[in-house]
Image 1: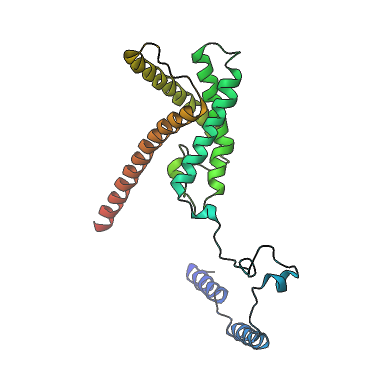
Image 2: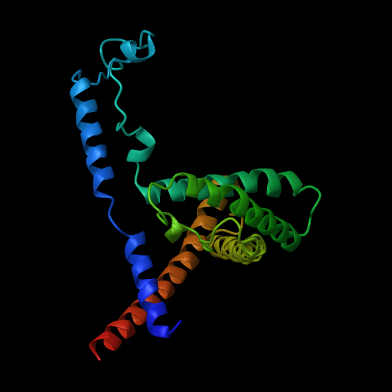
Length: 234
């Protein structure tokens, strides 16, 4: 068989494959029309009628079912939820690791290394999945995650551990700087490590690095888009 005949046969096969089944479409439309005529009754939203149970609560507030109702958590801004989750977990790590192991690990550098390692693990297995769970659209919380990659990327486990060890070293330096400044005012002044301030310093340093990362990603994407636009113009 010649190449020309093969090409004609292939094109004919494709045309038959994508041929619109007009009769089947007409049957489907007629079926839908018949079903709509049969169900003239308006769909109810009354909870008692749907479930057969009396709704709890006073008045008619919870009487009707609303599938599009937004809960109070979804009304909070994204940045507030992300910062609070990161802050809360950092405070927990300070409470359970730094305070819990401080009696056994007397060297501050070693304690910071252990704390950074644990925080990196917690971020990878708890914090980032929590942020993903709260997403209402894809990539909504990427601006608050240092390594916004899918869960199957196991290398982020080690990357987060190393990254948060570096964050802990900077947190230690910030505490040292605070105490040096206070001792210039009064030698008896001293700031100890406690969960609230620790979490605040940790989140500020973390978001500073993430902000730099986001800026670099934005500039790279902008540069790529500019090159694509220039190539299209050419």
